[in-house]
Structure formats: structure tokens, C-alpha cells
Length: 385
Image (cartoon, rainbow, N blue to C red; front, side, top):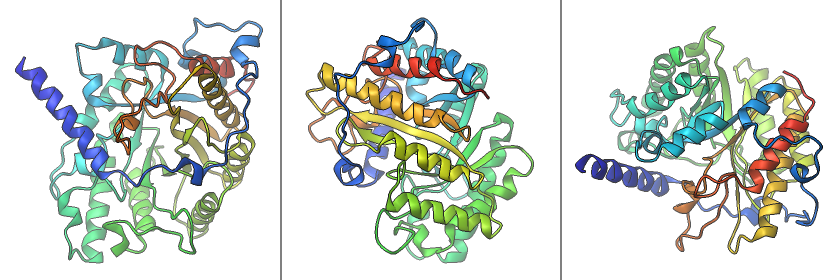
């Protein structure tokens, strides 16, 4: 039908928009140490007494006081010809983040002209399924509309645009009761002496991170929504994770409200931080009084993604969830999608269209070893809310 054709065209355009505006390629080897895991190690779900494969992730997570989430794509969520997408998403996960629909470009395509339909769709679906909406994101160096990237915008104009956007979006979603907003996404440099990396257009407003969090704090008021900083390549102990720690500590010391840090966790079977380093980083951020969310986890499995690699992938998922569960300030564990059928890695810096199979469900919505290891890790946990 024409409607399906239009839907498909919009979906393709949305994918192109994201991939065209995405950051440089993920060089897993430069970000993370080589994995030392042995695929022959017995997996928890194979050895655990009383493992219940019939329980859902969200049922198991509720008993230990952690949210288990997945990024949701509005097109697939509303595609009536594929009910497995929404069915699996809401059966298994009690928290959803819009993959792209709540970013600045999609929500404010023209200056002071807001389009909330797609972001609304995900927030409303979450509420309707007794789940929680996680806001992502209010300020980033990508996915920005053309009007914001025009040369010649002064620092004062950028500040006005930033404050205006944050205020309007947070006010619009106050009734959706989001758990948090990622106020600023990916601002920190991975290396070098500078804290911040150059990003368009925000480098022309040098204190933009402070400005964004101050605007978010004013918009949040007493609503209870938490204000997060979110980034990649800083999940364990590294130069970048130290920079982020120093930045949020400085903000708190200067009276600027920041409530949490999101650790994205885009990693691979071959390269990832150690579980102990991630747990130590979560604890260190907790000492500042900050919550931590694992926000965008996926584990790329470069072809051939054989049974051994899938076992290692399962160990990595279970180990990272275990690191989160060690500390009560780690309150959410989320993957960037949930089925290998729909992952941003299909199009992102992937000219050969390699099937990287990074998520807990396969392309047919079948549960993979990674899924069962997440479930076993939750069932085996003793933490309470």
C-alpha cells in the first residue's frame, strides 16, 4: 500500500539521517583492551541451580531493584505488520529510550518549531505498558538541524537556542515522568589535554555543558527527573573516564546540578573493558553521589560469529550486568536495541554490511545465549531495591 511505502521511505530516511550524522567509526581496539575471556568457561545459565528460563528480564530485574531497558525505534514500534517488535520490547523490558526520535534534529527541525509526534509515540507506548521512558538527548554534537549549524550564530544566540530547546522539551515531557534526561551527550575528548572535544555548533559556546545542565535543572524543578551526562569509551578506568569524573565533580563543586552518568558500552567480543574496571568506575561515580546507567550496550560479534563467539558475547553481557548489580547506584541496564534485525551497526561505518549480531535476540526474535546469561545474572543477584 501507499502507506507502507511512505512508512518504509521515512524509515530509510531516518536511518540515513542517523548514519550520516554519526560520529567517526568505533575503533574498539583503540578504546578497549583485548578480551581475555575463554569461551569454554561454563555459563551461569548452564550451571545455576533453579534457573527459570520462562521468566522475563523485566520480571527478574524488578526483584533486584534495577531497570532493564532497550532503545526503541518509533517506526518498528508502530509497524502493525511486525507485532513481534513491540511484543518482545514490552514483555521483556521495563524501560525504553527513543533511538533517535527525541534528539534535537527530530524534535526542533526549525528554530522554535517543535515536532514531538515520534518522541511522543515512544513515551506514550512506555507508559501504556507499565514501563519507564528515558529521555535522550537534549544537547549533542550530532543529529542537529541545519538552522543550528549555520555559521555566524553568536555565543549569545547559541545559548538562547540551547536553553530554549531544553526548556521546551523537558516541559513537554514532564507528564511522561521520564526517569531522566541525557542532558549532554558525548562532549568529552577521548585523549589530549582538553576536557571537551570540538563539536559543531557548541564549541562556539565554551561553557555549553554548564549552560545545558543549568537550563535542565531549572526546567526539572521538583519533578524528580534526573539529569545525566552520557558518553562512550569511558565505562572502565581510562583517561576519558577520569576526565568525565573530573568534569562532573567540578560541576557539583560549583553548584551545577548533575545527577548521574550514562556509560554507553558499545563494545565487541574481542575488545571490552574488564568487569572489575567497570564496577570500580561505577563505585567511584557513586562516591560523588551520582547514579549510573548502562545506556547503550551492544557487543559486536565480527563474522564469523560462531558458537564460541556467542558464548563469549554472553559472558560479556552477564559480566557487565554483574558489575552494575554490585553497586546500588547503578540503577538501569540498557541495550541499544534488542534484536539483531534492527541495530544501528548495520549501517554505521559498515560498508560491507557485516552482520555483527550485537544484541540479545537474533533476527528472528529468538533468545540467544546472551539473553539467557542476562536472565541468569538477574536471577542469581541478591541486591534489593
